[in-house]
Image (cartoon, rainbow, N blue to C red; front, top):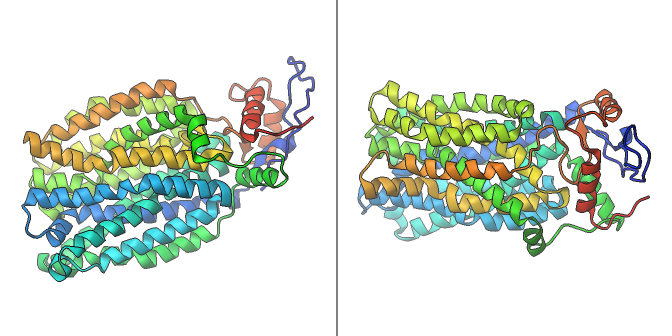
Length: 500
């Protein structure tokens, strides 16, 4: 990989732009294909591991309610298990703040390895945790503690993974490559669903309630070891290494404190929170909430409630990179408008189809709901990190993504189940999806377009030396390249840089 050098920002005369600063070939970051492949593999496998853990819990939530709150009604048990799921997200902002600050100071790769290890360990311990009949009230208490540990680690995982991939990805392919993260996420969720489905098909209900539900959780330990191996082989991003080099040379200021970061980027943080709220409300409706909804509200068996969502998750996962590539061509804002419009228009038809009761209509309803989800999540990993400069990217993502996750994502299944319980209407969850998508539609108008553009605080990134030379040669006519804006954002990020 060719790392970005400190660019010559002295005023020179460019074609048709006297007195402007110019890009040189040495300023461009060229990402070697082999390094990029290792990076993508290492981050995807970690994200897959994280969502496998989340998926397993979502698909055995009904059983966990029975095991850890045996004296409650079915509604109370469902609300308990979904409430514990929501507790995970309470710790995510703290994890995002602490691990985000560490990621901007120590490096993305080290923190990502730590988050993966913490997540796998906590998931394994849930699998061996005694239930209420064995240790009484300590069972739900310890379950909540382990879910808080999961939440803390997850707070740094997605923010770090998206930061890592976007800083490695060439500008023209960032949407597609970053969307591969969410391919891994939803394939991990599908893997969790598949594991639970296999258990439900192969063992009796009594064994599933006894020890069967624990096996998918316990498998997180060997799966996590494999994921950690892949993640340990990736190297630090060129953008971070350059920022660290300048900081060590006392040419630039270090990462901002939490107060400074919020003060400087509160608008960007607010935009990110609203977008994540809209996207993850629809996403968690389709994933974590749907097994409970199909089982408790639509009265499918637990096995069918799991199996019906599995093909939808797999097909949607494969479409996510296509939607990411589409955003590289037509822009992130356009695809996000399509996503929010889909959430507003398609939510009611999707739930009505599921409420029809036939297997074919339920599958069709799930596929309809997956359309806005795929359009949403395929863009978050590329557009949100582009809101923040290199020195504060991990921290900015950690705060904004995880505040949204705590307030809206983790609570989405609980809120939708509570709405059904309060209104006695199976259609009630659709309105929560619509409300959050309306907010998402509005905030897209305030989102800067980032497709095919360099990240704030970074010089342009390309796939080959030929592309670097072409970019320099066409810098005055390229509609996706504003050289003055690149240098201005670099100056803003580096603060005390003085060149000339």
